[in-house]
Image (cartoon, rainbow, N blue to C red; front, side, top):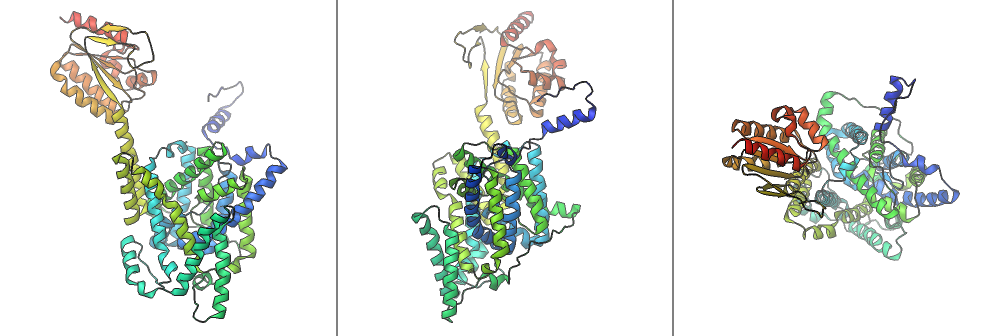
Length: 580
């Protein structure tokens, strides 16, 4: 977007205009309200109420599984869900705590405590805002799918593992965080299974599984919690042997007041220590929220502003730590529930947050009676749905490189932790991208004759005669460091030929990086030392600008950089003839 300075427009106004054009922040709420109707409001309220009811058990379960109280899970869903809908770039996105964050949040609390979690979440929010401001929303979508599937499946297995204790009623405390030691402890403790707890968990699991077969609109998790909690309370009153641990038993009476905002101390030592965790939260939040938004766009036909969505997610994650909350991101299951129940604007997400607030203020004491075994069943179903085992089976029919990436990411997530998995996963994404670009980038060698129309849609062919002593090399693709090395190896193998002129055809070179420029400079110098002229042809304007900045035009002469192969061949033939 160009900025035209009008008469009387000062430097400050121009700077503001430039800044305005550079920031891609346009919350969907404001555009949706311009043409809002009573019918749309009614549909959004209905959807918001349903989503709020569905989100209730998930917020509680995710809070407990993450190592915080159910209160914190609800507070996160209320504040984070409101801010994501208010500032986000997707019309139907529902934000809140999700299963993807359970593992990383649990590990951060174990290492750095709740204060460390607050700082890491705040820093992750800042990173997300910066990603949106620097327009990285579209880049995040290009992370290879096997990597996303790999660590999502790894998270699912880890979540499943954390619920075994409450599902079986083993009564374990201080369970190891590592996957293998954790399962070792489980197997050694199988003799401590509590039959009442196991029956309660199985009953809840059956309700959750069967409910969608009766009606997809019924919230199975909430029905399981209501029915099983009531039955457990009655069984506990009637039989002395029926003893099942509840939320109230483990966490005490739940508070019904919104926590007072509090601050936290930031210093460079703390920032350096928590930066890897904050980066993990930010990347995971960006991937999950944009994946959810993409799925929602496919159903509704809308279009997400990815950069605005990242900024909205960042604002939510900056705010929730001041109330003790855990990380927030877009939730696919709740977003799809919103869509199927008629939600089409961010108003539905705001209503969902208000519903949770009313439940928090007036129904919190009842949550104390919910059996932990019931929540374990809810999370096991969440883990199963996250696992994407059908997708994994499909990827096993893909190329071996994709299978390897999936397995590496999966095992890193399970055996080590999500931070390492995401870091290695992103590195793998870069390596895979470079490898595929290099595989698709060809370096062709021509001699004697050259068809100008080759590789184009032109039907009229023009064949150029290439004189003896002239070699033509064509780079078909971007000239970045991976391809530059490949090109350098080819040129070194061809040095023995010693032609009089080397034409490097660059019509399909869309960009050139520092390594490409460096290798090109070395080639020119070595060629000149051998008395070989170098001519560049088909150079695009942006590539020519890079060449001029590097001084390549002065090394070979500006006239040796041609805009078309015909000019380059004429020049090369003339130089070859004069050198005989």
